[in-house]
Picture 1 (spheres, rainbow, N blue to C red):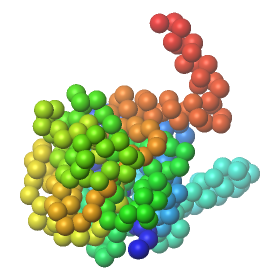
Picture 2 (picture 1 turned 90 degrees about the vertical axis):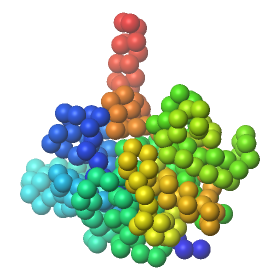
Picture 3 (picture 1 turned 30 degrees about the vertical axis):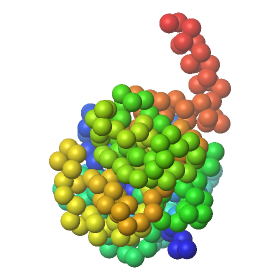
Picture 4 (picture 1 turned 30 degrees about the horizontal axis):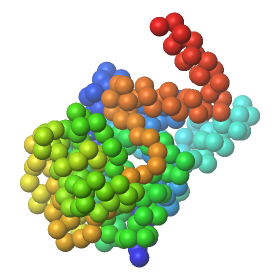
Length: 293
Ligand code: G1P
């Protein structure tokens, strides 16, 4: 079985739901405690064995490239000031030389189009996709759980999670082969992007983590626009499912949608409550604020 070595991270989105915070910085660079949201996603992928990161960027996303590069001036002034622990942290988290690629999506035609822009870098091997708006806090990284499942069953794997029925229309939603299947790894018979509540095949939403076979790129090349007038990854996957196996993994962990105001607040709070330097104070603050209600 071919190892999953490459991951695509589409980072071209404008972040309109959290403007003006994202007017001058990419939304993926918004800090969650002391690290950009994107760093958490890269760490999740690394834990799953990903060796090469393909960022699909757009205009005004230069900060992302700089972030994953050396910062010589900063590093030398940290060295001069003997702040060696910070320096070590800064440099140890950098991707290895040659392990990042940046591909430009020139027009915002949809998630499916963004992924297709990475086709030449992906080539002929199965690959992962991580949507960096979504942070998944988990003991074992969500993508690593998916790689385990992939090693068992192969094919295509997508992470899913239950969502209240009144929110299904904001997501891609899967149809399990067996109604009411409560296993962790579910065989699928269909999927649909942003269905109306009464048309949704289940309450299992697509979380934003995928392991896909390279044939999806061919399907994306002629994929017609779907929900919202955009080229949807979900539509191309639905076509791929006619010829390849697809499983949905109910992973263990909690997802946060950092592209929305409340989701970002939730993520910040959850990671603060788990951060060795500030967890106790953060917990005390939340208890104090709750009492004043
Ligand atoms: C995208 C996908 C959707 C998925 C969602 C997860 O939608 O198209 O299938 O459920 O991410 O966050 P978007 O949030 O870009 O509209």
